[in-house]
Length: 153
Length: 243
Image (cartoon, rainbow over all chains, first blue to last red; front, side):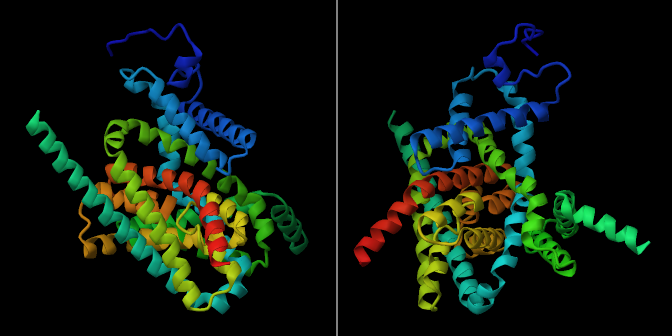
């Protein structure tokens, strides 16, 4: 509330970080920015021939753009937040069409089903445990080192 | 009467409307059951929704291709959803930057364990080469896994199915694996879910805890980026070595 009514002078920089045109919904504005960054990511991936998917490049570009903004302007990312959080909350819905593709490979899955189920379940359990334990161990080590560093200082 | 019904049916099945509606209704059913169970991991909405859709398509003898004409609009939103992962990352950037080394090291460990253990187990059990190649990117989000599978001689549609199945397994078993292995830190639990079970694990992490969700989104996004770059190279190197 410390910045009352500065919104009369729009700029492209402000537009990215939260200005919503009159009558426009934040969801629509946020979704528009997500698509703009996805398009930029696709274009960059195509132009450089990098084997990285466009949306992943778009994510990196958006992260850079958000980090470049005025750090004090915390409320500014509101429309992007509305759209991104909305999609993240129902991320699992978006995997349903790909999952239904199981129909296409029914024969292969019947033949190799047991072996594949064993491989998928065992490898996922191993990956969850290995990643979780490694990250937790390194977090504790980093916290200890940080403590030691501040003690010395 | 039957004639009119038939005409209505032909209309519905020739537009994307039916596939799109079916997907959303099936997910609503899956989510209602999930909510009813107080978000118990076993009642994950994805397999419920997939089962409802498959049953409906089988009952009406609708091919997947026809269904996907409508469902593609939902599938398409995976793109902007991946872009949007930058938002929680930017919010938590200070914490994330301080933990650059733990993040990078855990990413490499988790990614290598996920891919090699899946391929090794399936190979030992006699799974065919094209299926093995489709298993390599199984912990990476479906659209990226499809791209990787294509580059390394796998089947993209099969890779997408493995990715979704892996996501469901990870989201369902995560809690039990973490409890058994002694992973108590919510950031580590989230990070492991996002890495091993991509978007479905990330959705699960966000439902449990905001911090866990942020680290899941981070692992999910970084894994997609790193895997897209490194997996084709790693597989090519392995094939060159193995002859």
